[in-house]
Image (cartoon, rainbow, N blue to C red):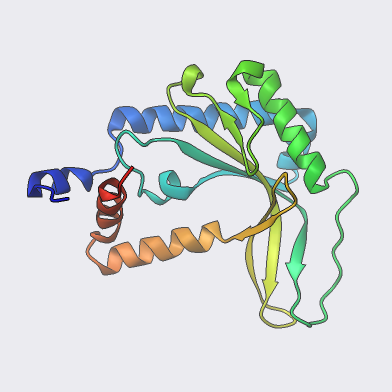
Length: 204
């Protein structure tokens, strides 16, 4: 399929100011919902829980009319790791903040704040918040801190998600963000514009 130059150029733009405002409102509402739970608030105030946007919204590669928000709820009371045969200090999780308990607590907090009808709990990898309350759909991902060791003292920090079906997914959202910024700067800020263009040119 061929596209005009004007069409391709229009696709390089990120969300409009109106859409961005709705995205920010949604992110703030989800954070308020989570911190309305005393257990999560205590963990957050102890710097053992971080709540942040990730994916295309955070990386500034989201496109117009595709303005959903991905929110990570990362528990850092301890960490999971791939030690690669290295001997490192053992750091264990308390029984309370298992991956299952974190998921259950996040789910309960969102339902208490937004209501049953606004929260879709059927997803395998996230809890989906309906767009009805703010106009923007959001996926909330409960996850844990993860370390990939490259030596006994050095590691690459990421996140570990245990899906409902038991599948483990490892991601590195900070590295993804940093690499995207670096590549965008090296290409005269054309990298992210090109990503948006490619997303919209793909068959739906």
